[in-house]
Length: 462
Ligand code: AMP
Ligand code: ZN
Image (cartoon, rainbow, N blue to C red; front, side):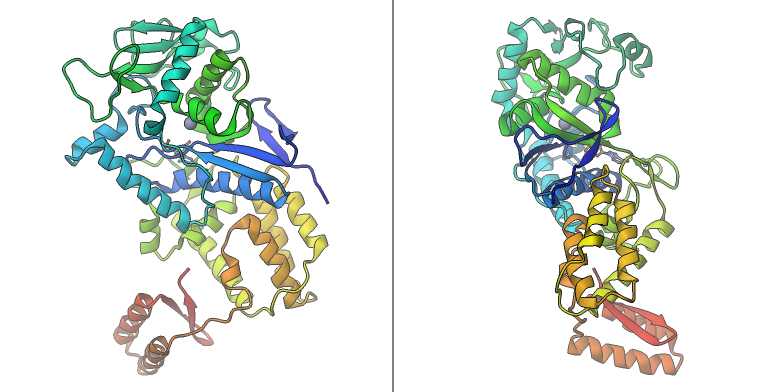
């Protein structure tokens, strides 16, 4: 059974049926991390959305090639063409090199996405490994008359490209008015952007390369045009990122590829809305930028966080509150408790699975898909072996790592059982101090214990 997949395309402003360039295949380019700091929950939302998209395509039998870039040079503070490189800034603060910072945070990033069960992208190219490709692309744009040089670099001349602005539908003049930072006076227009920036006079950058125009480094947008072309070709199928990338980063990627190759970089452009914290922006100064470690301290697991993200549609803003993530964690815990007691998977309930696929194929409507799941698992008329098989299939899209728990009753280690028994004694004696101490010890062994009216309830921390 093949069903259409509908996706909201920022470029057409409509929800269109996905039509691949090559039948049965999908090329996906996901805007990845700038590796100068640990990923926060908002960033993770962006990659969880892309992972859901990949899983939905796969569940519809597409063979997906996913490319996710690692930005390790050129992304300047403020996202524009001015200011210091984010990596160099992070490096200077701790007296390391930008190369050290890139290695450190790339590793952390890979660990984080594994924890939330994001499928590893097939290619994770680094900007610094593709300098030659980026220089080559500038040469093509230069030969076609799309570039000009000013004192701090080589710039793209947006006025030369009539299609410029098609993604954000923002005219060059509007950008001029909207520009928050003082525009570089040498730039011909506010829409123009750096393709190659020169290393500052008399200063050695940690990362710099020779080029036909002088020593320097590539502009931030260039890597995505160069690397997507190398690994997926032009045009490719789908490009993703957060909504903040629409007006500048993705607009400029499209401009570069169109100028150099005469075609659209990608056919579908999908953008996730932002995650807010307590209704506002996350920022370092407010101290509300959370990582997976901060969640762990409050007993929220990476998969619990994944469940929280799936509870909202990717195109709506998602407000992070501790109550909200705790409720999501509880829902996941309940599902896990149920699943452990199910019988071994037998046959999939195709009618329910059809409803589930209809939801996710409708522009990744994960809240509706979760509703299908809960109605199904709460239906007493359905046998638990069918539940096991069907939920296992749903989990190929949801990615809640349920295969580890379906029809697998919790095995309590001898050491944990001993602590649990001791805690029971302490509880009867109303020795709450000892009872809390034993709960912490169980925690250390990887178990969370909860006191329910029926007695102590143990679960594996996951
Ligand atoms: P960066 O490392 O800053 O380039 O960001 C990586 C990805 O996270 C990009 O696709 C951003 O659009 C996205 N992003 C950044 N902040 C948020 C947020 N608060 N909510 C959702 N996505 C975000
Ligand atoms: Zn990008």
